[in-house]
Image (cartoon, rainbow, N blue to C red; front, top):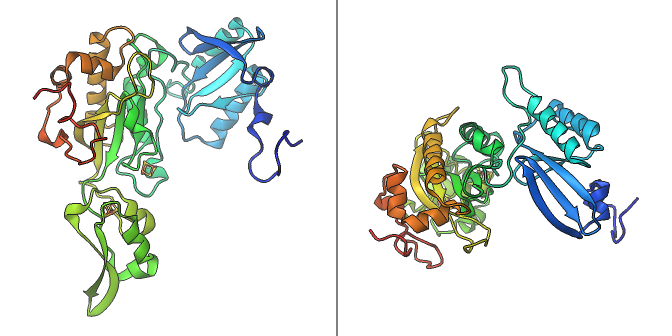
Length: 370
Ligand code: SF4
Ligand code: SF4
């Protein structure tokens, strides 16, 4: 039955059809919520209705078998309703605190052969929640690193902070596998960003057949691509030329033109950024800053990257005041001390001279005296 106000039945069905009854009945009329214990939230409506939510982490890429397992849990415990959060957490809603605790135990007991958790409960409050992340090598055309691999390696080293709420404040970790940044890395406490470091290769022989040259030229934000003619094996081909000193390795031209690949085993890797947030609680929202300009790709466990992240997280946990977000802590102690305490070298590569003053750079920041 179409929802009220829908003028056609084209496209996905209205999300309202899938809301649990308690959410539908109290839509837009919620009074407050609180976290009962790690992984369990209570929402109370103005009507007095209550709902308990149990949150569990997931891998974002799932098999159909795994999804069926999730559906079976929803059928057994939460009336067939389940939702995915934007951070790829699962949420099941139940009616009582006892039922929530029973479900938490059930989810924590589900293990893969070998003992790894299938649905670890946590991700609430002053801890690390699941990592919002992008497609990576599995699915996108421009990644400079993998998404699911880096995220799995990171979550394994911060697992205790997912299941507990012992940090001074929430720590939101994000991951984007290129600087097109489908993963909100610009405003996260800790961000993992895939970066290319070499300009695209040019496949002159095929470019004119595979690409619209004006589109490839227009796609470049820095004006580095221009039309050109090149002789290969005695034949002249219509193609493009790239002014390498202008290239910022964004991959936009490759999105438009498959004859301009820029993946490179040695050039590609990861930059780590910290200190961003979107909340305006206590201090205003902030952009993340680059603190490690390059970490090589080291699949399958990314040991250098996870060591850096763990060190930053542990130093913050030991040093920050209660309720202080990671960036607020670094601002208070001074970024020089942030680098010292986290054993990170500060290099001139971290100073961004981009002309737009809207970009926060180390030169402009008042918390940096060097
Ligand atoms: Fe693709 Fe870049 Fe988005 Fe990753 S961040 S999914 S590489 S566009
Ligand atoms: Fe331009 Fe980006 Fe292509 Fe470099 S990678 S040529 S900056 S579109």
